[in-house]
Length: 171
Image 1 (cartoon, rainbow, N blue to C red):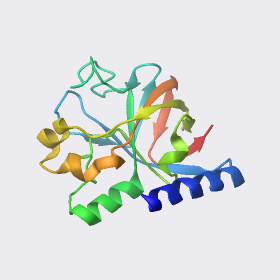
Image 2 (cartoon, one colour):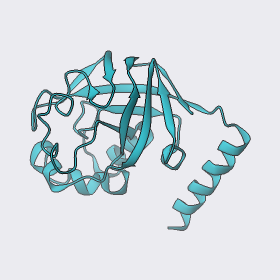
Image 3 (cartoon, rainbow, N blue to C red):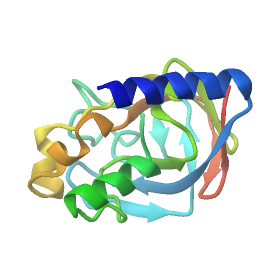
Image 4 (cartoon, one colour):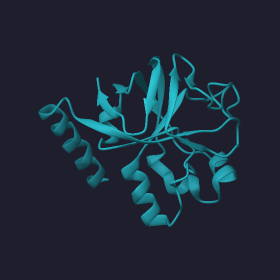
């Protein structure tokens, strides 16, 4: 608990000193339907108020689309690496079921902010905790392993092309 508060405090300090802090988009994943395997892409279109082109939520085929769906989900690469080390779960092929993987930023920095990724502008909406459905689709123990690092929900405010390697800038 103390360690987490220290991380949040130090992230705020870093941001105050360097408001132009940036990260990198390291992965893009979509699935065409609820429960379908995630596919890695090099680039995709972010669609205003819909999500990512060819993803289940933009297509209206997401499992939680009517009750708790997110236009775009995001997770931090550093969290995935720590989870892989601690739990021995493979996460590199999208088993986390999140659309975007970014590195170089801290989760607390994203809250209540907008992010520019490539041509798109995305707004932080809320945290995306893992659920039991994740275990059914990606394997037993996945939801527990992701725990409080389940990711973030974003809304697409300005559409455009996003590509792996794009800079992620807090706005």
